[in-house]
Amino acid sequence: MLKNPLKKYFWLFCLPTLLAFCIAFAIPFLSGIYLSFTSFTTVTNAKFVGLSNYIKAFSADADFINSLKFTVKFSAVSVISVNVIAFILATLLTKKLRGTNVFRTLFFMPNLIGGIVLGYIWQLIINGVLLPFGYTITSSANFGFWGLVALTNWQLIGYMMIIYIAGINNVPHDIIEAARVDGASNTRILFNIIIPSVMPSITICLFLTITNTFKIFDQNLALTAGAPSKATSMLALDIYNTFYGRVGYEGVGQAKAVVFFVIVAFVALLQLYFTRRKEAEQ
Amino acid sequence: MKKISFLFKYSFLIILSALFIFPVAMVFINSFKSRFYINSEPFKIPFSDTFVGIENYVSGLESTGFFDAFLWSLFITVLSVASIVLFTAMTAYYITRIKNKFTSTLYYAFVFSMIVPFQMVMFTMSKITNTLGLDNPLGITLIYLGFGAGLSVFIFSGFIKGIPKSLEEAATIDGCSPVQTFFLVVFPILKPTAITVAILNTMWIWNDYLLPYLTIGNDYKTIPIAIQYLKGGYGSVDMGALMAMLTLAVIPVIIFYLICQKYIIQGVTAGAVKG
Image 1 (cartoon, one colour):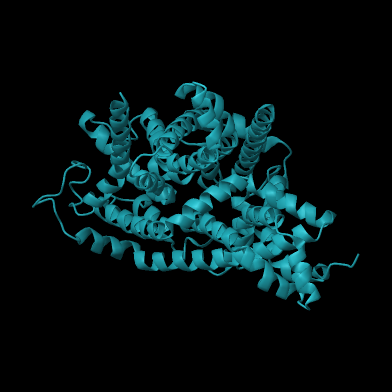
Image 2 (cartoon, each protein chain N blue to C red):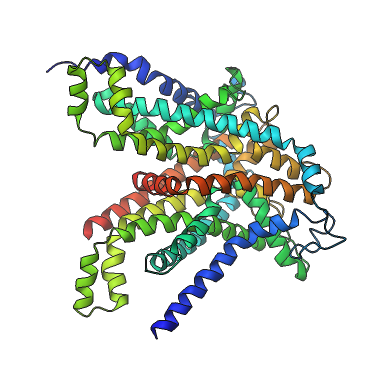
């Protein structure tokens, strides 16, 4: 077989992307892992300190653990509510109702608005709702928590709805018809035909919502910035504050970031493993 | 019975629609309200003494430099997205067609980068950007190319795998060089995928806050940075200006959405199914 003449063009086809990838990702990633074992204020004055940053991340104060708890709680609540509501909307909007396109357009719209802008929009709304009771969003961590949940639902429901709609539209129509002829109820059709066949969409949506909610930063910064004190700080914001809010804690920030990365990667792999297995069983 | 469930469904959808419009509508209404009344009566329509016309817009545009921010956002987004689409399509083509240990390692490195949270690399990346003198609107497009490479190469590769090689071989026999084959034969077939990649990256880069803030935020403000400065600065916050700037930030997004809606919905679906 002839050698593919494309092979000689590596420098043209791959070099620009590879160079950018190394500068923006690969080198920062590897040096980030290294720096998490050192004490530094700029990258050049790093001194090896072993695991001390990791120990400090968990023991110097409770910030990291608290933000981890907050993030897990927030993520669990949001993942469930976003996916349930998005799925209900998708089933409604795949029926032959008039105006489904208008609804789809509308529900998806918030997804395009950036996190910082979203945060301030919702700050206005939540402060307005709490106003008659004499509170603001920063009065209690609960307000910040549910505010963030409301914001995330508003932002992600439309996105997930679109993916569910695509999934539901792919369910072969004749199977549903056949089931109906055989006398299956709507509920049975939903649970025995539609849900199993949109399992791939469910996988994707769960995966997207878990990783998205876990990594939220902009919305958190704009909505509460962690207030009151640090009670509504999510992981990403806590890491940011450790890096840039405290001189001498850069190494600890980097160690927290590595832990954060490991958690996100673990969740992503776990999710993929479980849903792949479920798909195979069908 | 059927009629009741029909009515029920419609009212549910309409109530939900109202909830979806409400936040944006409130910001819009408040952008015409005197800044002293926004916190005390946020849900009221501005009237005579609380209505200030476009005063909030004037003061907001002055204090944020919104027009500059808009242009920088546009410049960075367009240039970054264009380079991502071009270069990652070429890279994906190369690593899909030339199979060896090195290219498959590259592929997995790109896929791996997708699951790494930004906080993991933000400190070291901004230092390197600084050291290399890439901390300007042009340099940052290279950073975006590096960050966008993961998802974009992944999406392009998935599509290129499905293109039959016979087309390219025919082009080669007709005397096309690999570069010509790519641009004249392969890239046109990639167009729908290129639109998906462009849409996904536009949504990300236009709204991105932390990356530009850490690298170029002191000298060049994009829209999210300008808004964060307005609110995050010390002293009292001008709520009127904030509402006006939030409105101005949302308007281009809505216009873009209404024009490209078809592609955006398709892009999101295709991107998600691949991702």
